[in-house]
Image 1 (cartoon, one colour):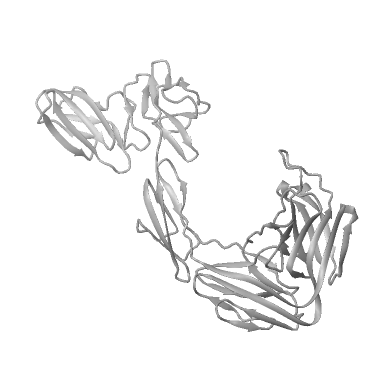
Image 2: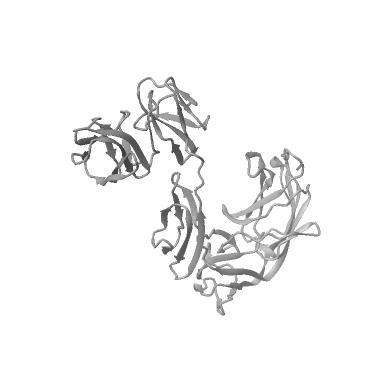
Length: 455
């Protein structure tokens, strides 16, 4: 699945690049050393398949010249470089050099001297984890990584400098609390072109020291990474037997089932999808789905009550139409009237397993689970009249347009008749008198009963 998470970083007071989350750097001699500016993270812009890179300008040109070098072999000058195409899937090292006839200020070091932090981790963490963000004109431009377990003072070093041609607002947090309300420690404004020194916010008990440098040129490096697309099949259950597989975010799809939609419904098995981006890049993913269900609930029937034989919780008793009977969720159920009943076991939020049905109070027969085709009537014998004088009626109901198969056997096991039923009657006029075994079979249900034929 194509995943591109974008946010913005300011290279200067007027140039904005679209960027991917940072590669965090490690502490060096008690201070964080940030190698790639202008900020607190390595600037890296990620694309999938191919990339079109366009810097976004926030203000008018401030500096004398801008020199861009792109890892695709292209170079450009000026405040508004042309759109750059990156067609191969690889990493492109790029840089921007700013030159100015007049020296300008860059921030080189920042030290947090003190804060009003009183937040402590409820286990063992008793030292702040400083995290801070910087804003130009309320536009977030810099994001730091957390600085773990250091009491103030804590120092940060920026070898390439951070441009401060505008007022820079510094928001400081204790990252321990994952941005709870009390994690915000306060803000400090670093004035434009500040020469360096101490800045305090008395109300928030914040104090920082900064050093700056006057420079006429700055070079900032960043990477543009063009990545292979990634297909990612996500599976979610639909019911007890089916899964929904999805692989969204692409121009076209081809599943191993032959489907070409972004989502398909499947049962157990191994499935693959080939996805294609709008630029023609291809990726594949496979997944195996497995249906492992517990046993269907069973019913123990007596003339006084019904019992769920194998589950004591997560059950619901159902009427003959498989509608929940209000309040009947215990293992024992005493029906208020004669009829057919089921018990349902809730296996998961998307899967309810239903028992075979039982007619109560005679406990004479059991019908199949919710997938059954044959639904028996409430009488204890579906064949009538018995004895029959040539025409046998069958009380049953077909579901799902399935046909039922009728078989008649002699008592010594000889097949006398076998036919697919298209009505509720069977003509037995040419069958000799006697006792026979009649069998009605439909899908996963078999019903057997002795019948008697008389002239």
